[in-house]
Length: 315
Image 1: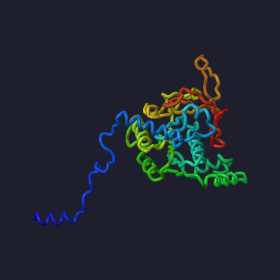
Image 2: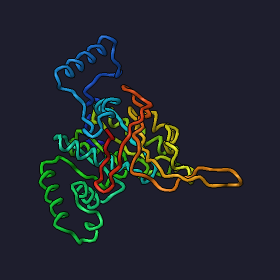
Image 3: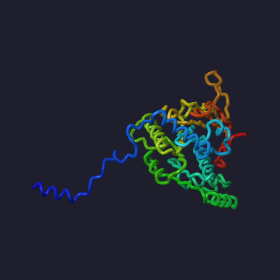
């Protein structure tokens, strides 16, 4: 094969794209000298003083949470953690409705519910009965609740993502819909990719923090706490109960634990009286276990209203 043939063949090929690093719109190294860092801070402060940066509001039903942790900051990772069946999804959906009512764009990522079940829970929050919606034996009251939900939600800017299995999937959804906030339900349902739990949760927590830092979009990440010893469910969870990895507590700007109170009885075991949990109550707590820019170790009394899919602070 001649050199001339090779040159002609190459001429027919499309031109090569420049290396990716040449297209990056910033200079290396990615460091800020102190005067530039100060300038970034003062510009941000000016925007906040003018009201251009306010953070996203927590629901008005949670005033003490707002007081202790402040608004949901741009680029922040907030983790809401609870034991199974306590109410983390309920809290996430309550937050979703509140943000939508304020006109914010929300991406709700779920590995826990189908879209049909999500909407059903919304309609229940407007006064419908869950069992009648499930069986189709609805009453006029249920249909009125549906009408009210349709009327309110027609202006919501919300997308329900029930397909994302990895953090990269979530990032792609964010790039598509450009939300003001992302709510993820829940951490332990994401793909482990063959990793053991400790390694996987560490990786996932790091990746979610990287996404919110690079995009500036706050992420509220629901997470599951490890189950307590049987009969000891009445004991409040602690930061150390974050399941799988200490990265969950380390990466969160805010870590809020949910806890329900329990009815208990004293049982005699081997001649010793032992307190045992019998049934969960509707009362409970928000526990502000960590707040990087606010107050920590705060207990806020709340009511879990399963019939209306809402969580309200007890004032």
